[in-house]
Structure formats: C-alpha cells, structure tokens
Length: 268
Image 1 (cartoon, rainbow, N blue to C red):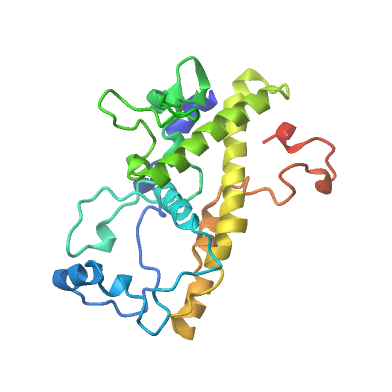
Image 2 (tube, rainbow, N blue to C red):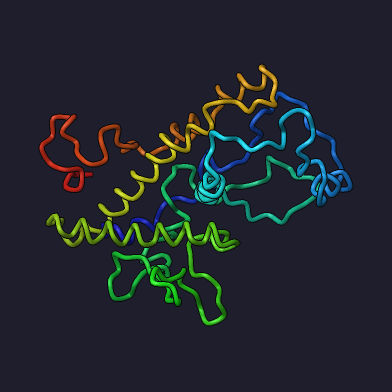
C-alpha cells in the first residue's frame, strides 16, 4: 500500500483501549478547589507566582533548560487531544483522547498527504509545506486569514511552539532530501523519512526530555516521589511505542550493531 495512504488509515484512539484519560496519582485524594479558588491561584502576583513561599516552589530549576517546557508542550499535543468543552467538573470516564500516545508526531504529519493534503507541498508530496514570510526560514503555512495549516492548531498558540513546529517542518524536508541522496526508491522516500524523523524525536524524548522526568520535584513527599518515578510518563509511553521502537545505537552509524551501512540506508 502507498505509505501516503497508509498514514491516513490508522485507527482512531476512541476505538482503542489507550484512548481514555486517567489520573497520574489515582490513589491520592483530589483538591476540592472551586472556581473562585482557581481564579485566586492564577491571579497576578498570586500563589503561583510567589517566590517567597519558603518551600522553593517558585524557584527556577537550574537542571532544566528554559526551552524544555515548550518541547513538553509539543509532546503533549502529539500524544493527547481532548475536544470536549471545558467544564468545572469533568467525568474522566467520558473523556476521549483523539491522539495516539506513540510519539509518532501525529501533530506534525496529520492524516498524511492523502488524509490532509493541505499540509504537504503539492509540488513534492514527500515534503511538508512551509509558509512564506520576511524571515529566511519562512513561517507555518497559513490560509488567507492567517490561520495556520498544521496538524494541530494548538501548535500556533504562541511564538515558541509555532517556531518549534516550523523547525520540525524544515527537519522533515531536509531528511527527505538526505534520504534521496542515498538511493532510496522513490515510493519509499516518504516512509523512510517519517521513520527517521520520528526516531530522532523519540530519541530526544527518551534520552534528553526523559531526564526531566527522572527525578521527583523537591516539593513532593517521598511517597509521591516514589509513585512519580514508578509511574513515569516515559515508562507508559514506551509500552505504547511501535515495535520499531527507538534506535539504541548511534544516530550517526550503526556499526556498533555489526552493520557496515549508515543508519540512513538501513531498512525499516
């Protein structure tokens, strides 16, 4: 089957067991805060902005670079999408996740060139469409009203996330060009390029972003800390990954696994 078509025929999460939301710590009692409490917490100069709590709750974490929260937002958009309207009380059993928690960059590729053709370059269907701007790196593709044509509209809610999405657009297109220089059959270029982009993305999540999850925050109790580590999101995501998984050898060469070919030319 054409890989461009296969991408648009994946099962929707509501049909799968993993398509439901849950709580990170279901055994702990919930906070019975009302709407007024939440508004007070989020107010300017409120508790969430306080740096004089005496518990280190407002301190910056020197171990985590400032850009990781935005990358974490991209991950969230990739593995979760709740389309239900916000309510004061939510029934978790009724909420559905319209994303696959497999780190497959669905927020970037959408339904593929067949399912969502407006995300792709009509002159080269293996490449993602990049918009035009005054900047040499371009912009997200947009319609005449300035609405971004992306796999997830949330990736255009602010400058940081939109530029991160743009970086992935350019990265995919560069990978397509690189794959072609290695003699890959034309009908396999798109499939190989998406696989390599996902592998790089998954490697970053596991080996770089995963470090941010590996230690419990200082402000939580030891009991919650143990629960945090044992139920790490990366542990759950790994169970939902495709069998192809993430390359454990070098991203530059797979000679360590007794293969003389570079990873660009390796078969899926």
